[in-house]
Image (cartoon, rainbow, N blue to C red):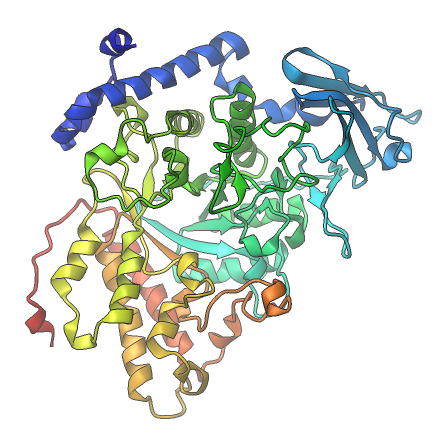
Length: 598
């Protein structure tokens, strides 16, 4: 292998070294990674006719309606003994419609149309795959490629529902140009209303998009869209990767949301979870074919101890087909403009970041602790996305600081456009928890805000969804706490706690926006100082929606001071739009002595 690495050329590696000469020590690692990527691309060319065809596998797997209205079903279930299709269409007969076994663990079935030439399975009716294992078990499964799943009110398990509407929604607005300054509004559809219930795609389109436009954000990052059986997982325990969550409405209503955002000049990113998958078997990917592997590594490698979830086998051909086609599906079918990749740190290392402090020593980012299968998957995903969609935006959630994460693949990098500046919100929480106001050190704050790798773009934020989750609270609530319940009225004199809180809320945001990165992110509601915290309905809180909502009604009351925070956030974004400081080249920040600020 050593000789092979010596013959590999990373085309633009010299550009990376110009930015960071210290990476020369790890040239062999960069060469090996690049070589593995090129080998994958070559294999795709040889076996599948290139990645373009390969990543459109959502057009051949799952269920496809043919021009003559026959239905073609295809699955990958290598460990299965037999596969059958059952559902409303055949009165739930478990044996009448067997799949035919093909090479490489594939199974196929064709259902001819009905006598009236309509498809054998009606739109919005239920289906199941019946898997017979070699051990003689009979399992009922949802197709991993299911495009729509739903849950009846009293049921715990999701059902695979055939989605083939007679008049599907047609998106008409073109994708906006890629913004030079990225101002992201991170949002969760289900909590996007003041009411104590799960809000809808349509509510978001009608009531939230106009606010986002007014505030001056040019990008929305949508969380919890990929289907997840457990609402309180915040959308991070995915059960159906190709299905837009039905708890907020239909696929067409999500398409309309994105279409309307595009009409406003706003791009939309999907929070994509390819780092792990839910352990659910009946309505998830786990044990799909009865085996402990299939899409995942066998345990222990295939299990994440902290997240209690399954980990993908990124070296498997069919897993690559599934995940890369999944990215393509969201880009093509729903016309998302890019992705925020969740859990990148967990993917990059065999230790998944558990118990690793990441001191910044380069040896932590290379060598045996790095999971090169998943690293090369991320390189491949970025290469394919940026080749097919030059304006596609990809953002990495990585806490480790992996060098070259946001450099082009041709330099030996992973190819992301941005990384999240995850140290910044931690810094603000630490300051508010531990320091008196007079002990704030502006030099130290500035250092945290500007301490990032040269040439790798960062998205800065004062707080995201993470800071608002149970056990923590929003910055506004750290600053003003219970005073927010009684003293936010502008009809009464402002007390010192509210006065301080409002001023610091604004200043923390402005300095983060100004110095923290090449993009800025705000989590839904925090722009106007949303009080309290986030908590989804679960057993521990009697299934309450009280904290799983955003109280936009607070902004709409002119006599409350929330609208002042909203106005500041809006003006800050509009000023950035005018002057473009996010996209400006790095500047030296001259330190001000702490004493000057007293």
